[in-house]
Amino acid sequence: MLITNGKLATFGEANQLIEDGAILIDGDEIAAVGPTTDLVARYPEEEILDAQGRLILPGFICAHTHFYGAFARGMALKTEAPASFPQILEYLWWRLDKALKLDDVRYSALVCLVDAIRNGTTTLIDHHASPNAVTGSLDVIAEAVTQAGLRACLCYEVSDRDGEETMLQGIGENERFIKQASGPYLAATFGLHASLTLSDETLKRAVEVADELDVGFHLHVAEDKADVADSLKKSGLRVVERLEQAGILGAKTIAAHAVHIDAFEMDTLRETGTKVAHNPRSNMNNAVGVADVLGMLRRRIDVGLGNDGFSNNMFSEMKTTYLLHKLAQEDPRVMGADQVLDMAVKNNARIAGLFFSKSLGELSVGAHADIILLDYVPTTPLNAGNLPWHLIFGMDGGQVSTTIVGGKVLMKDRELLTLDEDAITARSRDFAGKLWARM
Ligand SMILES: [Zn+2]
Image (cartoon, rainbow, N blue to C red):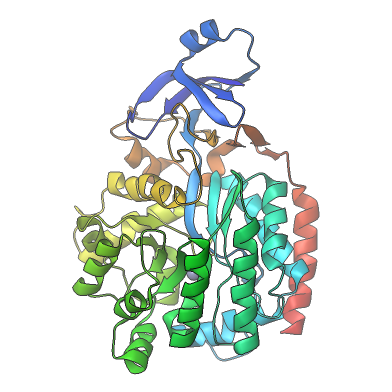
C-alpha cells in the first residue's frame, strides 16, 4: 500500500517534514519514504491511500497503562473521599481489581483499545491486576489486543496484598504468559505492583523466575511518599535502593512514576539503565507530587510517557507534561515542546524497543508500519523544527482520522474496521454496572 499526498513528519534520525510526502508499506513494515511524485513513479501498481493533505505521523506509544481501570469511569465511592494515595488504593483500586472477572477484564481492555485506535496510540505497555481472576487474565487481554490489531506488552502485577496464594498465581501468570507471548504484536514482561506491597521473599522469587526467562520488570516506583516510608521501615533503604539490592532494576525494567526519589536514586536508575515512565495526569490527579523529570533527563535516563489508565490520548499526556513542569519550576523556559516530544516519541520508542523487533516512533525504511493520519490544517507555517509546538497547541487525538498498525488499517476516516465499537460500548456499560453493584 502506498499512502500519498500527506505532510509527512518522519521523526527519528532524519526528522524531516516532507510537504507532499508518501510512504510505501510492504507487509508489516515501511519500505520507502519520499515525495509523492517519486514514489508513485517507482511503484505505479501499488494500491493507493490518498492522505488528502493530512499530516502523516508514526503511531504514538504509551509506556505505562492499566486497561483494567476502565470501569472506574464515573464510579461513585461508597466511602469518604480518599485523603491520601494509600486511601485511593484502598477505597478505589483494590476494591475494583478484586471485583474483576475475566469478562470485565476483556471489556475493560476492549474499551481502552477502541480509545487507543481513535487517538492514534498504536503501542501500549499494560500493567494488569485482577486478584480474583488471575490465571488466564493475560490471555484474555491478549485476545482483545489481537482482535483490535494493536501492539501491546502485557504483564500481571504481583503483590502480597491479597495473600500468598494470589501472589503465587501472579508469578505463575507472568511466567506462563512470558513463555507463550511472541511475535511482532504481543510481548510480555514481568509485572510487580510496588515496593510497598512486596516482601523481600516475594521479590526474590520474582527475580528467580524473571532471570530464568531473561526478562525485566514493570512496576510502580516511589509513586507516593508512602512507598518511601514503607521501604525505609522494611529495609532501612529508600525504594530505588531496595529494588536495586533485590535485583529488580536494569536496562529491561520499566519504573513507573519515580516521583519520590533523591539524587542518589536517580544516579542508580541511570547506572542500571532502568527506564522510567512519567504519568503527569495521574500524578496530578492523585496529588502525589511532581517527578523531577528534568533532573532525570539531564542524567540521560530514558524517561518516557505513560497514561496510567487515563484516556489513551497521548496528546493530552504531552500537553500535561508541557504545562506541569513549567508551573512546578515556576519557569516558562523549561520543558519545551521539543523535549516533551522527545520523551513521548524517542524515549517511548526506546522503551517499546525492549519488546518489539523493528523501529517504532519513526517513519523510516524497515520500521514497523504503525502510522496515523491527522486532520490538522496548520494556520501558521509548519516545519520539522516547530512541529512540537504545533502539536502541543494545535493537535489532538480527536483529529486522528486513520490508524494503521503493521500495515493493517484499523480505522479509516474515523470508522473502526477491526472492532465493533457500539457492541463493545454496550457490553462494557452492562459489565461495569454489574461490577459497581458487586463492589
Ligand atoms: Zn500505574
